[in-house]
Image (cartoon, rainbow, N blue to C red; front, side, top):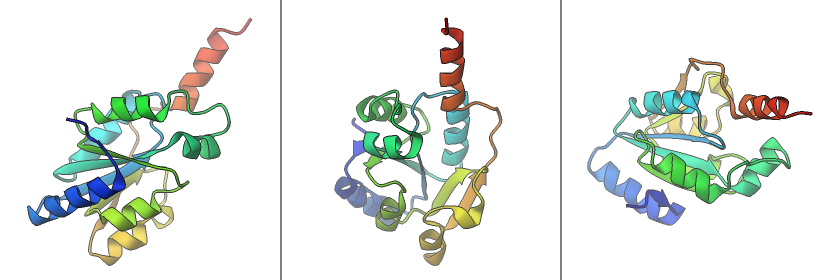
Length: 159
């Protein structure tokens, strides 16, 4: 089963999940080079509900946010990898710089971001709270990031 969905298909699935009283959790990110921190974060996010939907930044979106050298892996590869992780139920690509449109369209029950985000700055918070949903943050358990992994690789192979 392909768990990477277009927004249109995901909206239909979201309605089916709502009809079944399933609690839908949404988070988003670039997920460029998957590391243990990502897995921990996604596992904790999934524990908040029944279904975890990931908004995955497109290649163009990652490039605008992270710079011209990113992403390392193309959106098709990132989508394939993240959609095959145990906690993840569905993945939806988005081209915008923020997942605001996805959140407005999917109306998750719970919106999750890393604790490095102040709740008042989480994109889509207003939409989710206005419909009676919750916004949660997750503490990072390790000090890993894709940027740090890239730096380690670059430093290791310098002349």
